[in-house]
Amino acid sequence: MKVLGIAGSPRRGGNTDRLLAELIRGAASRGAETKTIILNDLNFISCQHCDACLKKGNCKYQDDMQMVYRELEQADRIVLASPIHFMGVTAQMKAMIDRCQALWARKYVLNVPPLGNRRERKGFFISVAGRTVANVFDGALLTIKSLFTVLDVTYAGELLLRNVDEKGAIARHPDALKQAFLAGQKLVAE
Figure 1 (cartoon, rainbow, N blue to C red):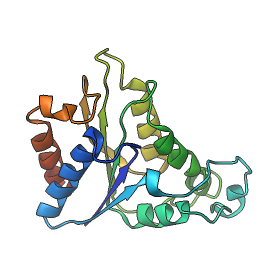
Figure 2 (spheres, rainbow, N blue to C red; figure 1 turned 90 degrees about the vertical axis):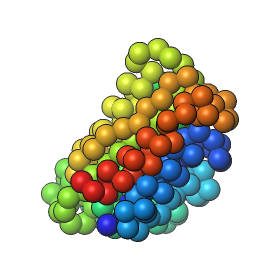
Figure 3 (cartoon, one colour; figure 1 turned 30 degrees about the horizontal axis):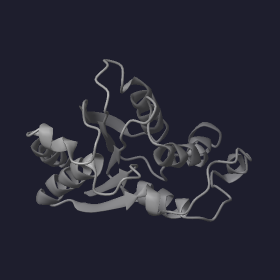
Figure 4 (tube, helix red, strand yellow; figure 1 turned 135 degrees about the vertical axis):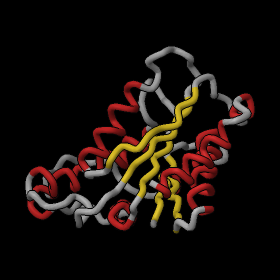
């Protein structure tokens, strides 16, 4: 079982990173092979909408997204983690998602499995928001669920926390890290 965590926060060691790390630790405690990608550390351009991917299902730009594609293909469980920025995912996460247009082309234009084979894959979303309004996660959830649909990844759940903004604010939610750890264990057991 391979669990891939993708960290979309530009702030290292912040609330989202800590939750993702705990989920990954929970998955590893059940024997999963784990890897975390930090999007802010990668060098890739945003989708240029050049449509080159429509021919063979591969992006023509040879940058760090090529590694992300490989990791997505190998993963059995995919965990996306992003704080809320302007009612959506971070720019880093959105840029990665937009570059999955090549995987969309595989599925909907070329009629091949977007991740190279048909097997059960599950996805999970972690997010925090400084605001407490009821719909603060709606935009991000639409984007994340759309990506998982394109990738043929079953949406397995989420951990969403409001009123978590400044670095370290996760401490005000004493059971949040435990929830993340248990979510990692459950994700692997399913």
